[in-house]
Image (cartoon, rainbow, N blue to C red; front, side):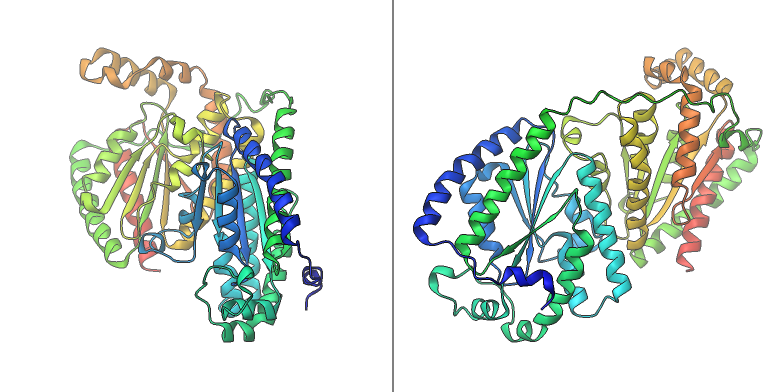
Length: 496
């Protein structure tokens, strides 16, 4: 037996009379911690993992019994729906993230698939290590955002598991029925210990440590877990209330006034209208055919449209959507987050809108707001937007690994061209709605935004999701460039 599990088979137990006293003392503490959380600016995620027959379901039932279940969202991930299978793997977890002030219980969670795959040898040791590295990064992203992550691993001995799965354990120690084969588990138990040790070791960190629980005795299991939850929640609340660190301010960037990557974009590019009409028809026909081929192959495009105010994003997107059957895409436009969205990690609102395989998602503004407007306007602290580069790269890598084709456009125009378009919007009644006081304020921070774009490109133009910088002074050439790039990227991916 691997060493880490030796301490989990020592016969720990709590007799009935002691259990009652401990339970009665813990329940009000759990409720009080839950009431305090309701006023907090973070959420709590409780991960329940371990072997089949360890009592995961019974434990979760107990947590809901001892706390207010109206503020607990319990999720079991032991079955996959076709909706989940047709999207990147982490979509199913993101859509169940608890909002700030509430608790989410994850049974199985992101550990279940890689654990079972490791036991069945469908993952090599290197592949399993990469999966666990991805999990560790995912959990760090959650905790960096303030989430309290409490992870429990329930361990039972080989003999106790066998009794449980055969429903031969003493009645007082029975757990709800679990659909597992006792003979198969008896054979693979040693391998399960080996994979479990690897899983725990790779993801046991200071920001999300594992709590290893001897679960042979349900009374001991339930009291121990409840006490850890109380201690973790009260400790986290105390740390949050005493955090008086001042807001960070970004130092003056010495690069202001220096050339940026945007200065390399050739804004003199033009296109005659007659040629534009020919190219528009050609590229839209190509895109129409490719969209149907994507659907037939169950592949999807995730297209991001970013750019300066008045750069022509809207008109470019319209030329794209004109070419695609409405059944094959969803266009999502983003502005300031709603109250519901602010109660979640900033990536949550983008994950939830990803379309299933064969149906593409077009984002008018995107997750890059974190490193653009939120950075420049001070809505995100420097430590928040700096770590967002890695979080975004991880997000886009997960999209690509699933089979999505990620295409990202920044439409660049000159300050003079933007000014001319702003004035035109003010002078034309049907365009008044397009110009706001915020547009003029943003214009005053042109150099700050240019540096933010430069950092964005440097940190997030990856091999799997590169940026395309589009010359936008000529709307006609910009539209054709975008359509050509979309078609080119789709063809390249479909041809493998």
